[in-house]
Image (cartoon, rainbow, N blue to C red):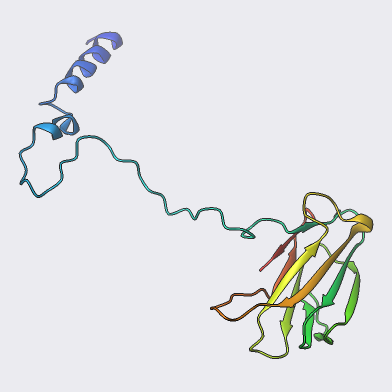
Length: 170
């Protein structure tokens, strides 16, 4: 029986021989048709992980989850919208154009659903204050506006408040 160091050395020598167990090292010796590219070194693998996209999984506002939170909805559109929390059994309530609604003691976690009553309208949500600081008085203002639909516009229909107090828009 060979000692471990001798066995390790024998394996290292065998693997360093291009003709034995390392066909990758022989790629430069392979004869190929001139129209086919010749691989001479390993290529980096491209992952399918999406690049950073603004607003994708990035909090748009924050509240302190240990205190009662307030969300102010401002309908800055020309169409009525409706809102409801997904985790309650209450019917959706309407917000008229240019109207403001204050939602106190927002449950955390929660998902707030907001839809235009006119199904052709595409909504956008703007948040204040910025997500880098906690909201003063634990209040976040969400201004609802219409998306310019000149191009294939994608809007938002939900605001998620997670257990850490981060708000996301979907």
